[in-house]
Picture 1 (tube, helix red, strand yellow):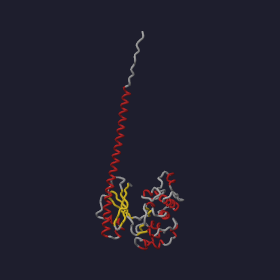
Picture 2 (cartoon, rainbow, N blue to C red):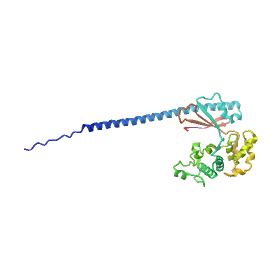
Picture 3 (cartoon, one colour):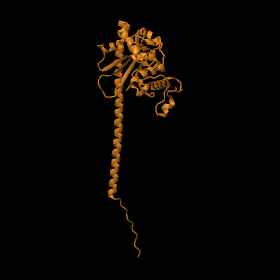
Picture 4 (cartoon, one colour):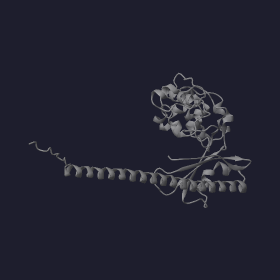
Length: 311
């Protein structure tokens, strides 16, 4: 007699089910943690942007107050001395805001790269302690960065060099910030040179410019400027440089040759001032900076440019 066939039921081990449940719980926890961290990071970034925006508004208020002070002093005093010493005037103004620091720097107190010749930049680099061959390379790279063409100077650098080294290529236009200047080939390695230039165009302010900047501009040695300053016994003026600009001296030919800046590119009075504001209290690093470039138009200070950045 044939026995009936019985079917055996396969059961899932209880241990396997428990492990599966635990893995599911752990995966859910990791997912929740990742989402929570992402939300927190988003909130933190949004909060940081809000803080930066609030700081920027506050700093603009500080600069607007400094601008109002300048306008009032120009209207009341109506003399060139106030404009020439605006940094001192603002620093000693009793009504200046206390929750921010406003500094003022006159245009032309450094060599303006956008209007300087390669020879002048080369002379300045030599005066900053850069050997002549490297000074030539720096001056050529700066000129290649600024000029409108894509032709590489013999010692310069255009797009191909930057692409090869994984660097942003030159925009072939005037520089706008010192941070941009530092991206030019070799410049970041020469902080002494970087401290003597400005990312502007315009005239050089003779009473405020360092001796090496004046020497580089008019094609003489910095020792000649020092001797002249000692002889006149006061801050130099444009008229004092006439005798030096008339002919080259032996030492002026060591680096960069003789390529004197026209006297029309020298001035005794600032063409503009750059006003910069930042928070007085330490609110974390980095702090927002706000900058106004101010010129006199028909006897009144006018903001020519506004910008803000994180250093």
